[in-house]
Amino acid sequence: MQSVCQLIKHHVRSEDAARRYGGDELVLILPDTSPELAGKRAEEIRISIRDVEMQYHRGKAGTLTLSFGIATFPDSGTAAKELLRAADAALLRAKREGRDRVQLQGQA
Image 1: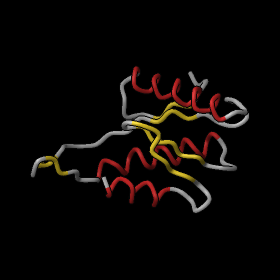
Image 2: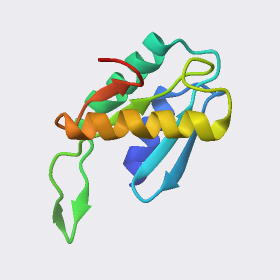
Image 3: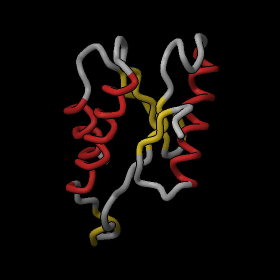
């Protein structure tokens, strides 16, 4: 898990925040970032995670994959709860459509 944290830290700026939200969900807060740039950063992390080797009971755990749901202020909401709800809806759509993908809230 430490390698995953290092990878994420490598892809975020000092003014960004990366936090565990619950279970296997993380929240990235990227101030002053356009939806396009947020999507690009998520895509870079998604692709980079494939190079991380995770150990599980003294063996390889296999290839890791990530799905991202992206919500933006103020388009997706102006309150934290609204933004989290919008990002979660986008994440669920990414998982429904095959996982290992980036989904922007409201994007077809």
